[in-house]
Length: 201
Image 1 (tube, rainbow, N blue to C red):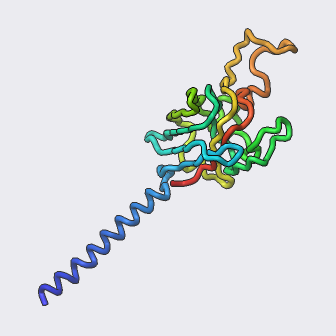
Image 2 (image 1 turned 180 degrees about the vertical axis):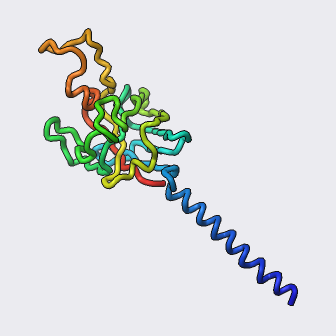
Image 3 (image 1 turned 90 degrees about the vertical axis):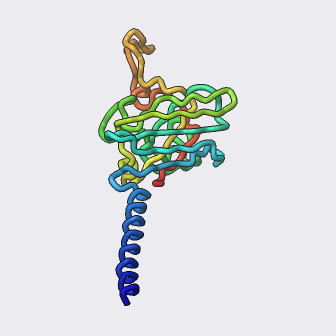
């Protein structure tokens, strides 16, 4: 009897410990408090996987973004979080014909111009062999904020992003100095090469 009594006490404690452990693990996987990781498989307009994205909590209200790509044109490419979690290559921009129009504009928690959009990130440099990796830490968003009502996506553009760095000494044909409306929208980064819907985990 004493032996059975000890067993009766030990079993509930063991089960309780397992339940607590499972609960904590579940919270981490779900990103409780916006601290869990997020990621994306990045695909080109033909549906081929060309890269991966990971977004994770970096502490102090910051997020770390890591990207790895292959099979892309060499050079610098604009790289941004976009406002909608829909990457439809058949959805075309009526003004330019660029794919992935479904992803909307740059992700922004406010009414900022480029390069102050919440989702603006440094250019991605792709080597001559078509591969590229980069990571950046931003304090403009937390992981949980990427999962609003319509989600978000990561976009790789065809051209380099000038980050609206157009000093006043430059001017357009009309004599207007500094960045124009198109530059202030997306940094003249051109068409959309590849897109990935950002998901939890």
